[in-house]
Image (cartoon, rainbow, N blue to C red; front, side):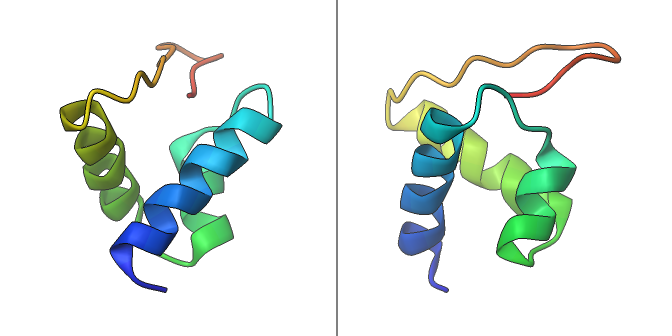
Length: 60
């Protein structure tokens, strides 16, 4: 899966699910967790609002 396809799929996954953690996204798309962090950063740079929650109940 190319980066743009994965980023679009991340957007759809986050819209569909109430909250997901980066590890779940990484497992879903079979990529390293750091790749998910970079993709989320890319979404932010595209002015696509991604709300993140910190702590033990954290996620996107």
